[in-house]
Length: 118
Length: 199
Ligand SMILES: Nc1nc2c(ncn2[C@@H]2O[C@H](COP(=O)(O)OP(=O)(O)O)[C@@H](O)[C@H]2O)c(=O)[nH]1
Ligand SMILES: [Mg+2]
Image (tube, rainbow over all chains, first blue to last red; front, side, top):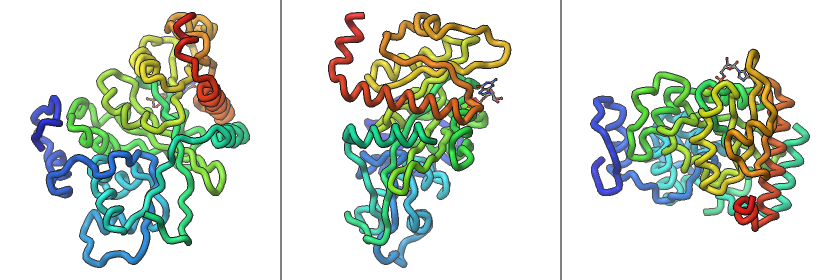
């Protein structure tokens, strides 16, 4: 976990901070840097039987649309790791995600009206 | 990357809830969320690692570093997520990730420790991100006029400041409604930066 992009990393004895980089094979930059905490991801197609561990778990969790934050929580991996794994699975055609662009004004007004009616 | 047509992925939108330690963020989210706010140590570890920084890890056993997470189904096609984030300066590395794509932010203030919200207010102001200030009314706290709070924080006149009780669903709903009004107002008025400067 060295590299130019890591800034003020302090040594830490906590082993859980080593593990994430093993799962993702040393990569810490998500392919899809635009995956957000609230981006919903959902399993698509036929699950690949060769998927192992976290990846298989993620695909199972995403049987129903699930946010990136909730995937991380339920699979028990750090958020940054979840993003890397999810983007891998999107590229592999196992997951699809819907990333909203900037919302148009009428959509914002609809959200406001819904919120006011809560 | 189109999915199978039998799986409809609703639109996910989010609002961030920030503010100092113990100001009522978890309470606020819990008052309106359909799910128990996630407020776990796992959530803390998650956010600590992904950013190549281990700052704040020593505090991970306290709930204040947790990332609260609540959900509100607005209609079958739209879900609103609430993310609570600690408002202390040393956790500001979490905020970029949270603010990215957010509709806006609620900054909670406890008038007994008004300075606790300075870092959050500074941050969201500098991002030009829409926010409202919700003054959480705690028992035994002196009542402050919202204009006094605005002045103490040096907020421009167009930033909404309102009182709230984070334990009350109706109150939380009203704060979120005010935030959405602000979000819409900011979108509809592109000259807001100039307006703030001339004040
Ligand atoms: N009187 C009063 N107490 C509140 C209010 N909001 C939160 N509290 C209490 O303040 C304490 C801290 O709230 P919490 O939501 O955990 O704060 P957080 O650290 O910002 O998540 C809890 O004991 C709440 O019950 C409020 O609006 N009024
Ligand atoms: Mg809390």
